[in-house]
Image 1 (spheres, helix red, strand yellow):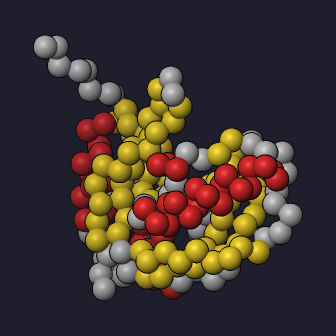
Image 2 (cartoon, helix red, strand yellow; image 1 turned 180 degrees about the vertical axis):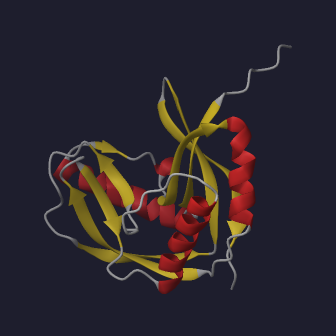
Length: 180
């Protein structure tokens, strides 16, 4: 049997990865919003909240990112997903939080600092937790209010993004536990 050739680059990002009940609630919300807003639904297995987008990296550097993540010392926290919003410029409907927990803001800042210190390019805009629900939406939702979806966050992941004929797929490569 011929061994597959390893990819030269990997498209990766760090993310909060929901458990199945949270994922199911967000997938149900996504389906409900599609009728109102149009667009393409985020496939349920791909639902996540990005902590830090890295992009395409040489595959041999993935281990460097795993080592960097192992040094992150974040704290577990509760998240209330309670708002909907729409980014008109890229036609994305997303869910987020009206109050960013301090532990989340600290975790995102820790990633930004660690990545910068290690020479990785990072987005320097302030962190905004967002969970993409729809892409290419014709319009935003009529209301920004959302019955809160509670998410207990106790881990984060390094995620691989890959495309094939069926679309884009996100696969967690490694998980790390948060304290508490």
